[in-house]
Amino acid sequence: MIEVKNITKKYGSFTAVENISFKINEGEIIGLLGPNGAGKSTTMNMITGYIEPTEGEIIIEGYNMAQKPRKAKSQIGYMPEGVPLYSDLTVKEFVTYMAELKKVDKKIRKEKVDKIIEKTGLKDVEKKLTRNLSRGYKQRVSMAGALVGEPKILILDEPTVGLDPKQITEIRELIRELGKTHTIILSSHILSEVSQICNKVIIINEGKIVAVDTPENLEKKVSTNNNIYVTVEDSENKMDTIKEKIADIKEVKLIKENEDGTKQYILESDGDVDLRKIIFTEFAKENITIFEMKKPDATLEDAFMKLIEGGEK
Amino acid sequence: MWAVIKKEFKSYFYTPIGYIFIGVFLIAFSISFYLSVIGYGNVNFEYIYYTLPTILVLAFIIPLLTMRSFSEERKTGTEQLLLTSPISITKIVLGKFIAALFIVLLTELCTFMYFGILCHYGMPKLATTFATLFGFLLFVMSYISFGMLTSSITENQIISGIISIGFFIITWVLPEYNSSLESYSFINMFYKYTQGQIDIGDSVTFLTFTITCILLTITVMQRRKSVK
Image 1 (tube, rainbow over the protein chains, first blue to last red):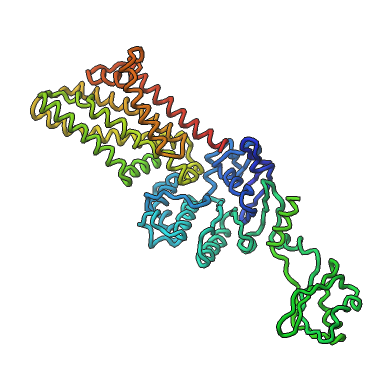
Image 2: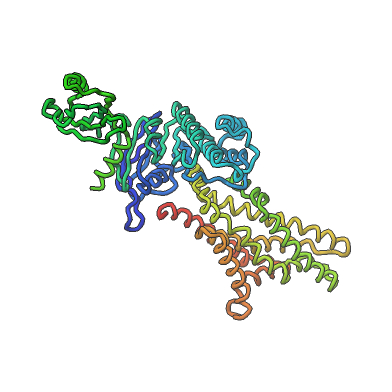
């Protein structure tokens, strides 16, 4: 469990993170989301004990980071942004060194290191120097370094940056797998990633928390208006007057005219009314043929943009 | 702490630095050996440690040993791995310091082959030899701790290296020109050891200087946590 209580980080007069508080329960996968420079990495660096908050406290599994740093740090596996590695060590040496730093018992160290190398798919490259590895492999080595010592909490700073689509799916799969046994915080500015993996999202902008919720709830929150996209064939030009026929439609907007003579419209209505049924029956009466009708899902993208813009105003 | 010592010591040999340090020192040592033994028929082993080539070369190779220690970690970001692992900053700093000392001890061990050669031709004095080796360790230790301090304050190892070289040369040359500084000269203190004198005052001076530099390094690292 991670408890972050009112932490603030100031650099001179610049405030990077301002009065952030949240609580992460065991077994949760949390996505820390925000535009570049929002304070994601700063927050993560404070949780891992790399930097100290100017104010506030961080409690990791019951250990206060400021008072019992060693106990608190040993609960955490950290994969920093940009995957720093010791370039003159081989993969195996690197993972072994991390195990030694994390005080893995000497008797079981070799066995544990082998197991983690196996798990992260590094068996084939274990004798290579880390500087000669491709980006995808470096990412995995960094992940292996975080996993060694069996920490309860994993903190992953932008774990999929710089990977190709196949590697991204692999890493996501690995994170989801790890999520069954670990508490995970990951930061990202890729929204689809967060909505796929995380149970909870913390959106940060300009050093402040803008929202904390599940991805589904955030999506729901922003879908206030009820828009319907329709593509119709309207040979008698009745769409212009349809607003008068169906009282629930507040606004009709033409988006585009297709080459085959069909037209696409957005029909707007108030909050809770679902227009689809009424459109289906009424349009048939008016002799308007519906080619396509859909109610767009609000995405996390929308939620994000809305919250961030709201925050800036 | 042992993990840090082991890794740092090995790193000296994964990179050419360990070989360069030992190799270059032994070359300078050989030149002095040739000059004093063959040239002057001297059988003083300890004297070779206190000659111009060996001292001159030290000014350049000690910074080589220390300039990477913290700068490199900071530049590549591996500092994040080290500082977020459950090991205290004191142990990290001491670990790196001791690893560098091991390289110096290894070098001293290598110079024993010259002692062997001297034994073949004459009777070098064992007691003064040990006094010299002890003094040499203290002397180099002071510069290593200073080098590490410079490395902890900058991300650029070249800057760290230049400050260390400058410090060595200034503390070496300045007392030559100003006699009031003579008693503070590390080289002059080291000279006494090569004469077989282990001066408590000098030993304490070397140790105090070293401890101060190490404490400052720890402070710098700790302080960076709150200002970074």
